[in-house]
Image (cartoon, rainbow, N blue to C red; front, side, top):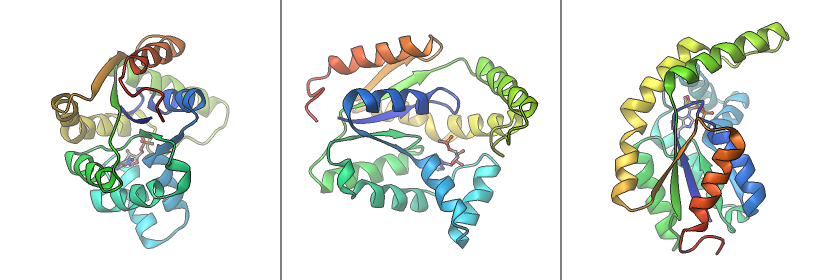
Length: 200
Ligand code: AMP
């Protein structure tokens, strides 16, 4: 099973990816996590990525694609993967197509998680307050202001992927405002209807 989870920041892609990987025994590949790891190494590329991420903007395609290409070449991706936060531009989607095509592989589905963005911003505001009250460190890009910038980047650069994958016949959509368990159940039901679902 090779899946993409598509949706704005805060839609629950990471949460759903973690649930699906348990169900299907495949791995989750979050470019946000991989970029945060790269940033933590302190290399000049990592620091540049960190700066861009803190502003809520997108890291350049070539850097993200290189990270994904390296990750997809590892043996643990052989059974399949869930991409969470990638692709985020049409250029990344095309690079992914080429990467998979060269390995004789293709995607099974792109799951769009639809959400109400005003409610998302309210949720982030509430989460930040709770974390601050507990004395926890809030991620630099997890503030309401940066979230609004990330949402703007989503609309400008990532939303075109909805049409892109619709035209390819790969897009399925779920209501991300439902309770977490129900979103998972909806995704599983949609995946069960795919011709190759469960084929690995
Ligand atoms: P995420 O954890 O998926 O919300 O990503 C956090 C941040 O990492 C984003 O706001 C971007 O700055 C950066 N990022 C993650 N994935 C990508 C991607 N596919 N392309 C460009 N930037 C990305």
